[in-house]
Structure formats: C-alpha cells, structure tokens
Image (tube, rainbow, N blue to C red):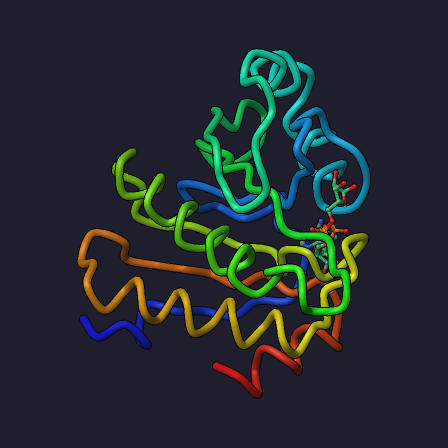
Length: 169
Ligand code: AR6
C-alpha cells in the first residue's frame, strides 16, 4: 500500500488510542514529567515507571521501548525530542532522528500500528509548523521503504495542531 494511505490524523488524547504502540515525548531521564509524558505514565501505571527506571535514560533523538501496562496500547516507545534553541543547534536533525528511531524500533518489535504526539512542540517549544513538516516528511520517507507498518497515526492535542497537520499531510 502506498505510504500516504497508511497515515492518519486524529484529534485527542494519545493514551486512549488502540494501537500496537504509542510514542512518548519524554525527557532524557525517562522518568516522566509533564505534558504527554505525564498523561502516559498516569494511564499506564507505576509498572511503567519501574521499567523506565531500568533503562538508564535516553539521549536526545534516540528511542527506547517498554510495555504499555494499563494502556490500551501494548507498547510505549519513549523518544527524547530536542529542546528548541532557535534552530541552530541541530534541532531539525534530532527531531527527524526521533521519528526514524521510533519507527525502526517499531519494526524490530513487529509493531504494525503506531501513534505519535507532536514531539517537542509543547514544553520543548519547537515551532509547530516546522516540527509538523519534519514529522510528516520523515514518516512518509520511512514508509516508502517499509511494508510492515500498516498504520501511523498523528495525534493532535487541540485544534491548532490538528489544523497544522491537516495542512501539511
Ligand atoms: N495526547 C496527545 N498529545 C498530547 C497530550 C496527550 N494526552 N498531552 C500533551 N500533548 P509535551 P515536549 C501534546 O510538552 O514538547 C515533558 O515534561 C502537546 O500539546 O508533552 O516534547 C517531558 O517529560 C504537544 O503538542 O512534550 C519532557 O520533559 C505535544 O504533545 C518535555 O515535556 C508535546 O508536548 C518534553 O517536551
């Protein structure tokens, strides 16, 4: 199936999605904090935090996987987006790495459906339009050479993100 037909857009809370894996926009400690990270830990339960404690953190741009515990999703892929510093600190490449590495981990774990939040666009302040273009182009690029992933969902938390994604997909 061509890559575009496997990409979906939804508005809402990523913790409710019934997909094989949801992606968490974490920080390098992987111990949970605010935003979508907090929502995921709250819905998944303390077992998620216990598993995360054993992972020894994660560098920016990389990704690590845990089980989903009490979430509808079987897996959580934790990735660490770049903190926006004005655009000259390699932020674009690191954000692209988050999507590439999350998708590679998904393939390794036979995950067929995966949902992404808008990584780095909250607390980490990455400009939404610029981050959206990177998210969409990277996923399309990855799907061109991959046939095992059947569904990639971009989850938009609010109307602004939804409209921005809609205009860039
Ligand atoms: N479902 C989907 N998207 C959500 C949800 C949700 N339940 N909650 C928030 N978002 P952020 P970051 C959106 O701040 O910018 C944390 O403290 C939100 O509107 O969660 O990568 C971590 O521990 C925004 O569009 O992540 C790190 O310290 C997007 O998710 C830091 O924030 C990402 O916002 C990471 O910052």
